[in-house]
Length: 180
Image 1 (cartoon, rainbow, N blue to C red):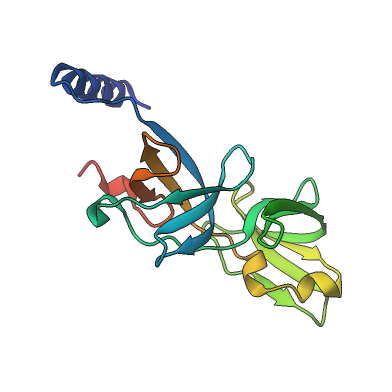
Image 2 (cartoon, one colour; image 1 turned 180 degrees about the vertical axis):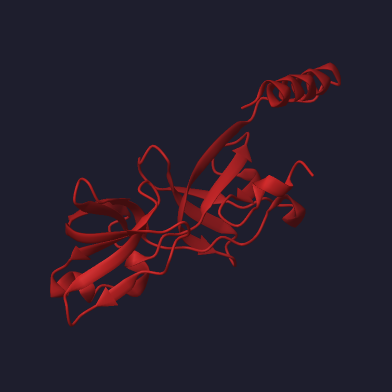
């Protein structure tokens, strides 16, 4: 963060403290693996890769950004030859070993590609900024399509665990326009 932005953040914090505003909340971020609009709940995997967390969306709809897309793909590790997916039935993370066979640079995520004829799976790896192709057993290729789709990343602010006061869809929010 630049010195100017740090100064601005410090000034905002000082103003909030001076006016008696409570800034004791916490901020968490993770990848969405389930979203239930009716129940007003989002389930995500925190960035530290721990167990899934379910959070109620903000009571005030103006405190929530774009609706998050869900997907079971949590992480692609091409160098380590594995992907991490959310197993909804067991409500846990599952590491699946895969053999990478190709990679091409990609500046934006592309949709997963399942090629049953060649027994390959092509997934976007954010850490490598690439579409990575893996060989995969037929039983893996027959898993539900959302297994290989990455959900959006969301950031939420809360004071009480489990209840978001604000929720921002990081994936769908253009932060470059925030300062303009």
